[in-house]
Image (cartoon, rainbow, N blue to C red; front, side):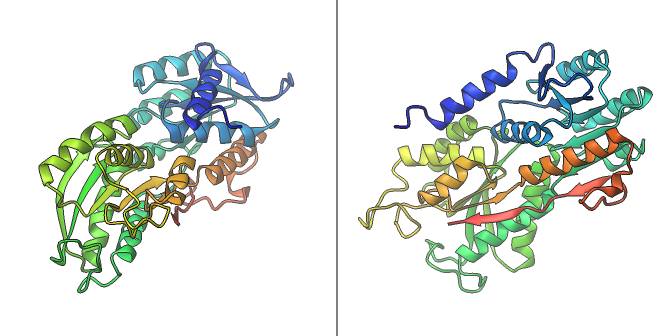
Length: 348
């Protein structure tokens, strides 16, 4: 019998991960001769980052020791953690910066110590990555996620901008939508939002953007903000596009409480054919999001393939620690700096 919820399991995992973060808990084999690698996270409370960090640790295995630090969404704390980590003489740092604009100073600091850097999840400015040859970025191109999200929606609405199907509930030939935005000014949030809208325009789909609501990547914030949005727009919403899965799941939770996602046709399941069903799309590919899709609530997501990124990061780190050329990895290194991992669409 399953006795713990997914959320409870995550809390247990998170507690285990953060219990020794103040000193930099060593994860991995205890072999004395292994090199140390710093793994610095912007916020372990982010569900995507929690999974990503665990995948990096698992992929590292006995290749090197992993020193994990959680900045709790504070750049000041992360700066202090880096200073503390330098005393441990790491061979390399894997860095998920709180503020991508802080990357310039961090690169200069680690360059002075000749410690190579693999950035991930939050991409530094290109001019900052160009400061030093021994810093790299592993990630996905945010533009692609917005484009794929738009493709999922266009397919749902019939793929013909001149003749939308029944999901255009008011029959006006226009998709009325709300965007749940991750974070104002955050590179991924801005690009995902921009490319979503641009992709519709490029294909000739007419949109009416009812609202762009910032919920800071958080499920609980999206939950709180959906109620007022529904009241403000009086049943006109035909689509909710979320910059990540966590916010999409928060919206679904609130919508279910307000009477959406009912088994109206009494076929024993919730699906897109029920009158109270509302299309919602996310990005990330969280396990909970995939479960929500299979259960008939979330329409689709665009998977941000953290497992492939973790594999690429560990292989690149191993090469750099061994003094091998970074180009010798199995992953294409673009401009000598970037390893790009494609997003993947996921629907039921």
